[in-house]
Length: 326
Image 1 (cartoon, one colour):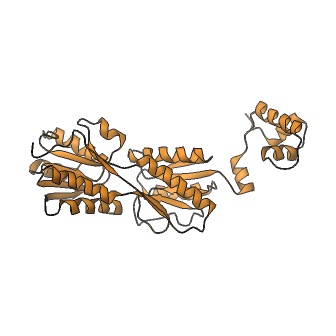
Image 2: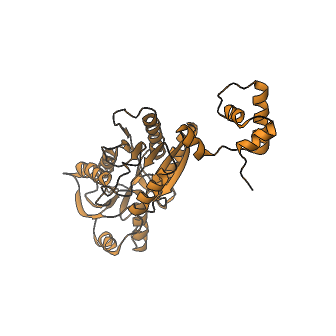
Image 3: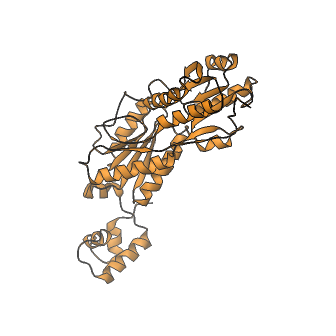
């Protein structure tokens, strides 16, 4: 089926293509009767403007990009939900890129996306330090990645780590294991700093293990968990915690009777686990909405100073954690 064009609308309405263009763009001088006839013909034919052609002509595509590191991580769809809601409310479409946790795919996808004439990009990087979309020619807002190049939205993860530590101290735990995030992640380091600061002088860290943001738990970590006397395992995100819950169950360790587990992010799956996961709750959807707000203001005022929005966190206690004093 051939695409309906402005010429088709003009022929049906008995007017020039220029008149149709004036009506569609609410410009020029067209009588109300003629404008109504043109709009009726547009509806009858199902005409839709070629968005790329409109972008070339006006310089406004009303489209933004959203580059996510890995949609299999439940954090990412929650961010996407917030981005889509805010963009739609502002009359913008969103083009989504899933990098499948590969920096090469991330770079290739963002560079190809730039050919579609977006007005801006919301970006959660696959990693830190390897590549940034600084030269794609449109404003960029980063989520949850420490950078001086772009506007930034992040959660107060240092406080989140501190809340984990304070819960552990207040409930009489004296020996813990720490599953930190990947070594490259500045956010993971910040979470850890908050945790360690709260534990210092109160609780011993028997072992610490750096793990990617994944539910895959390798044999070395399983051995550490099952062969130690820690009463609580603290993680850098919920996906790690979910993998650890499963590994402990397979190893015959009960949660929380034998060992408590604390996550970070509070993705929707955390509440559905058995036992339900105690976790630091990040305002994930709000992070997406705030990123769009920053991006749209940057599009309108490109000379603004670089800005940072820091959103508060809290801690949600569920069945995976219990007091060591019970």
